[in-house]
Length: 448
Ligand SMILES: *[C@@H]1O[C@H](CO)[C@@H](O)[C@H](O)[C@H]1NC(C)=O
Image 1 (tube, rainbow, N blue to C red):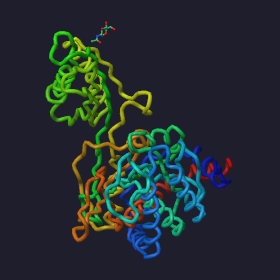
Image 2: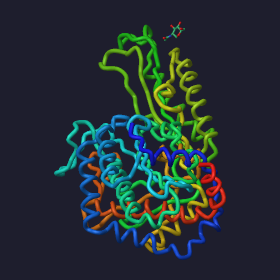
Image 3: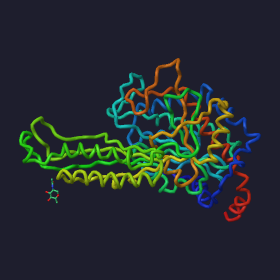
Image 4: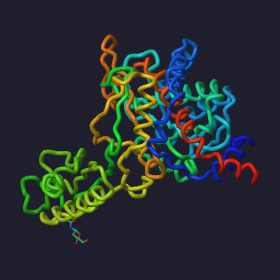
């Protein structure tokens, strides 16, 4: 636990800090601050900073760690924050780190990166490929961490621009482990007014960003079900209860949840992605395990799907004399259902203003919602939050594969963009929010 005096001071204010809601007209009144994004990008693209960010990204890429095991990644982050003289709180939720840069006073705004890798083998031939068998940064979290450290450096070098305090949130276990929920439960966002997060994407051009107000990514849940029958000789079915046929009917019936029970205008997915059963051509097995995921854009739809998935699996199994148990991982995950990622509308305007000032209006795109999900959504349930996609496609370079592919690669040219966007979104947010704190801030000083 590293807990400097400065951090305790920041945390006290952080806890006393009243919640502020920014109106959209307020956020857009950014006259005079329009140079910050360009200035930060210019700074981020300086050769020294680029080499440093790229070096960090490669170090993390070589040593991928799974959720809640990001000990070396977390250590590297803390070492870099130490070198910059940025105080932090650690550990938060096992491996998480929260850095503080700015005045130490409200308003507080958070920028977030996820640290964990995926349990898969890297197939990219690259000097800095994964040195940990069966683990790979195939979702770009190595880039996300290095960009947030880059933002820390930009902010530290431009302290005069900070009218409040930026929290640098490095969270564990984004990939299904609900690290964001654990960080939230640890009180990380108490009295923080807004949070920003981003994801690198291989299919949009470098130097562009995309997002939308409202629902951006779906909420999700996962299930496993064991369908039990009675094993026996494949040639004498009358003496067995066949779980393979029962499971097959279960899967077909599950398809009706979206096609017949859901509102066609409310996008939903139920996918059975796992079917494990049987090992011989002449033996009916005792049981079959199936598993999958369900997605939707509202809590109501997700809850409804979860309930109906259980009913359909048990009911359809019973039709064929089988028993079924359904597991929604309620004990292993922080919550059985991950919420949808819903972008705050005022922050959308803020994001567009900042991104346009940095990249130009034509580089800031709207996008359709995606059925993928992101645990950033937990933060957005607690405070206004905004999540966006950062393009890294470069048609003159190698063709980039999709996230979670064993051939996934980062176009490292993206790193300064992410760092500068994080830093600019936070700095400009504080500039907009600070005047609202004028009187509560004086009161806080008197109390302290
Ligand atoms: C299902 O469960 C009931 C009650 O426990 C049991 O009597 C029956 O044998 C089970 N059937 C199968 C196919 O496992």
